[in-house]
Image 1 (spheres, each protein chain N blue to C red):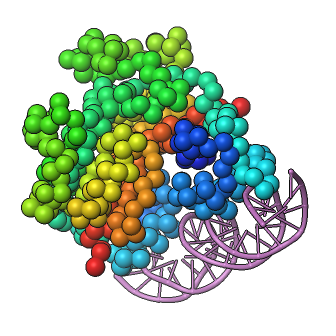
Image 2: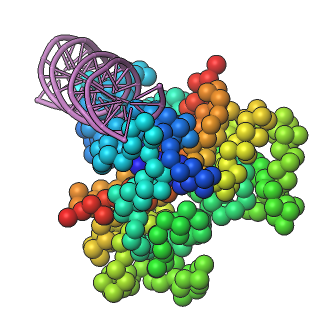
Length: 196
Length: 196
DNA sequence: ACATGTGAACTGCTTCACAGCG
DNA sequence: CGCTGTGAAGCAGTTCACATGT
């Protein structure tokens, strides 16, 4: 869905008012059948003989994905990964707003970081009820990731985007997505090593 | 494989000399059957009744993944995503060395960036034969990603790690892994929006 | 007795094919 | 006539269950 939305917004910018599953497939690297099937799960958005109306479908997908409201992000770990994320244009565009930044390094706490004050991780639990964080972005060293994730969950946050290369063990009520860049690179390494 | 390797090195550091598929499953968030099945594809590394010898299996996996040699990385786009990657500890540990950094911004070209001189993207093709780049890391704006990917492929690089949120259209002989952080965040958004 | 290696059963997803509708 | 929506067929990956080996 997310991928389709990206392609559709691309198509809309180029002036398409309607698009067939075939055309969308070419943009997004999927098959047309796949797209029709996926979209049909959520409703009948297309017109037979015509294709899908681009602006309406964009609106539908944004609704489905929950992108019509703003999500309040808290970044844990004011290192470079967090910093890179903070200025990633794709985030602000989609209604993901960074509203808090935490670290445990006394040399960083109190300083500003992309316009946000870096707060002490020890104060997270106290701040959380007031700040209403929706999603925590974990950009911390791998050996501390699990402990900090437990802390984050204890404050009531139920969605985590994890950049530490380790699978987090958390209650099923918490949604976790781990972005494991080491794995991605090693897949490339594997492909290169096994190429004739 | 990559995930198992991470878990095994973790286990080795804690002094395990042998590990059962069951124990490894608990570490890595997989099932024991899955692990046995995956490992069996590449060989019979375990001892029945005992489990897998940790150091040997680590060595085997590193061999399989092609991690015994050094891979030469070139980062395209000297922004913060590239910068974050450059200092990500997981990379150097695994034999991925950044040996070149390119950008097209005249204000950046010639400056240093984490110890590397930022070169003009226009010189990439000329440098490539000498520098023997194995993998290109694309950390460029989404609207330029495809064009730059084409350029990279034209220089003979056959493996790309892409951070732009767009599926790249490239020859099948090139291995591409796209890390689409927008998709990951939108999946969290979806989960939050549809939670009762 | 314990834990691997493996073929068979199962599950979920992708692709196919076409009826149905504009 | 074109393209969607959809049930059915096909496929890949996961889980199960147990025979095999230490």
